[in-house]
Each structure stands twice: as structure tokens, then as C-alpha cells.
Image (cartoon, rainbow, N blue to C red):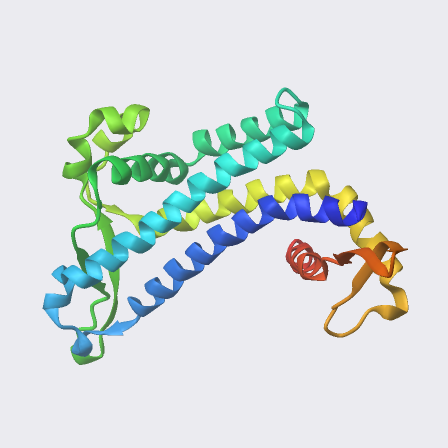
Length: 259
């Protein structure tokens, strides 16, 4: 039960990372549907279609909000586990600052999330881009770009803070696609840090439980332990504890992705 508590406590943070991954996956799937589109299949009206633009805004805002949720939850988790003034918490804060300082994507998308919460959806249209094919123009294939209007952003100096100076240097609208790709790299690095500092403790707890289960482990991993058995006046009392093999599987799958 003590080993199970270690796993369950750590999983409360890991599941927030998984939630962020779900939103990134939804965004990636949406992007795939907007990519490699033959020009012969394009209806020009789709670029300003309200339903499609609303869907793009919903998906992007969900991703950015879950990124903020991921950062705040991770910091609270580490503070409670290791102490708010611990070296681990300070190292985590330093790591997020390093990504903020090194990545325009990290800085801008953090501010864009704040813009969305205060002023509404930032995406007001899509833009279709295709590589020229003069020989066979009917075979041209292109992608829909998700653009943020730079002029709209420049009207909100207070919301963008220090990033505003960088926006002044831009000559074109901001394509959000490469920025989210860069942000994903930061997310992976931050989660890797959180896992690594717990890795030894987690792996020991997982090993202990798997050793304890031993030959009783089934393909369904459905093992229930009965404890504190007591019988009094023909009444039987006991506690039931289910081994957290579903959570262990989550961690084992993630651990394999680090190799």
C-alpha cells in the first residue's frame, strides 16, 4: 500500500501531462486534415468559414490552457512533495525560465493564452498556401496555415508585456504551427525533468509491487488484496486494496518513450 501510494501520488501530476498530450494530439489531427490538400478540392469560402474558425480557436485555446494547467500543477506538485523552498522546486522554476528566455514560441504562446482569456479568440481566418506547379497546376497541393493577425496583437501592448517589442519587429502575420511544434519540445523537456527526479523512487515502488504480485499477476492485471481481516459476532470486516497496475502501465509506457 505504501508503494501504491508513491505511484498514485506521482500519477496525479502525470495525468495532467497526459491531458495536455490529448490536446496536442487533437491539434495534430486537426492540422493533418488541413495539410496536403489538392487545390482542386478547395472551396475558397472555407478560409472564412465560421464553424471551421471556431474549431481552430477551440483546439488552440484548449492546448494553450492545458499547457498553463500543466505548468501550474507541476509546480504545486513539486512544492508539496519536496518543499516549496527545495532545490528541486528552484531547479524546476529555473528550467521553465530557461525555456521562456530561449524560445519565442514559449513566450508568445504563453501571452496568447492570456490574450484569449481576456479578449476572445485570436484566430479570425485561415490562409491556404501551395507550392507552385507551373507544369501541372491542377496537381498543386497545399496546406492551410493558422495565422494570428499581427496588427490585432499590436493593439494589446499591456497583455503582451516584454514580448511586445518582439512583435514590433515582425513583418508578417504569425503562423502558429511552427510555434506549437517548438512549444511541444519544451513540454517534453519539462516533463522529463519531473519524471527523472522521481524515477528511482517510482521504479522501486513499481518493482516492489510486481514482485509482491508474483505468480498471481494476470494478463488483466486485476489483483485485489484483502487486509485487516477481523471477525466478530458473525460479522466479517476487512479492507480491500486494488494494486494500481493501470497506473504502472502508464509509467512503463512513458519510461520506454525516454529510451
